[in-house]
Image 1: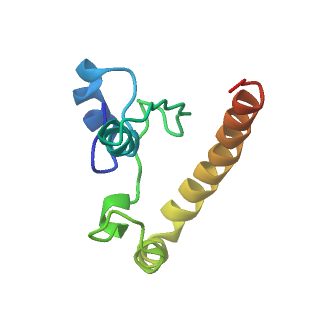
Image 2 (image 1 turned 60 degrees about the vertical axis):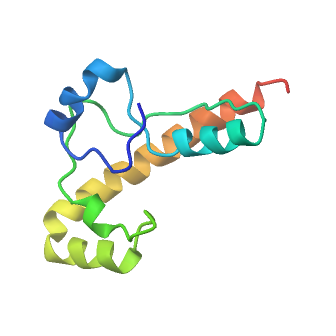
Image 3 (image 1 turned 120 degrees about the vertical axis):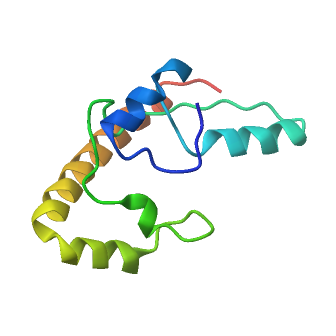
Length: 112
C-alpha cells in the first residue's frame, strides 16, 4: 500500500495491516509515471521501521508542501526534545546504513 504521509505509530500501522505487509510512500507515484510513459516498473524496497514501532518525533510536521523534509523543522523539533530525538535518529541512522547495505547486495546480484 502506498500513502502520502509517514505512518507514525504502531496503532496506525496496525490499522493499515489489512492492505498488505508494508506501507511505502514513493513507489506508487513512480509506477504511475512509468505506466503513463509505457515503461516497465519494478520496485525493490527494504523496511526501515517495524510494524510494532512508533516514531516519537512527528516527521510529518517536518515536511513541506512538496513532501520533502525541511531540515530546519526537523532540527527544531529535535532541539525541543533531544532526549527523545537523538536516540531515535541514531537508531534510524543505524538501520538506514544496514538496509542500504542489504539493498546494495541485492542489486549487485541482479542481472539486467
